[in-house]
Length: 108
Image 1 (cartoon, rainbow, N blue to C red):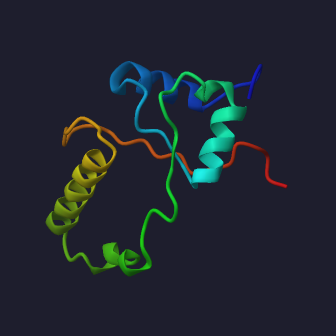
Image 2 (image 1 turned 30 degrees about the horizontal axis):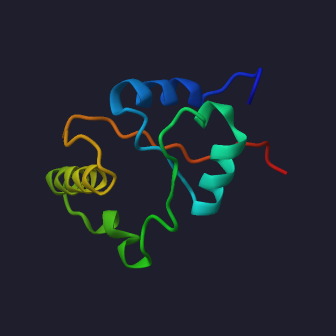
C-alpha cells in the first residue's frame, strides 16, 4: 500500500474526521490484528475490529423474504440502527455505512 494508490485512505480519513476513527472492521479478529500492524493507513485508528461471520446462517436469505419496497426499507433502517448501536456509532438514520469487502493483496 505504501507509495501506491490506496482506495482506503479517503475512507479512513473520513472516518477519522467524522467518527473519531471508529467503525472500521475486518473479516476476522486475526485479520484485524494483522492488518492493524501491517498497513500504515490503519495505524492512526483507535481500533480495528474483527467480525467473525457477520451474518448468522439463520439470517441468510432474509432479504428474499421481504415483500415490497416499504418492507425492505424498514428492514434496512433497522439493520443500520443495529450496526450503529452495536459498534457505538452516532445514531443517524441518514448516515452512510461504508463496507469494504476485498483483499489487501493481489489474488494468488
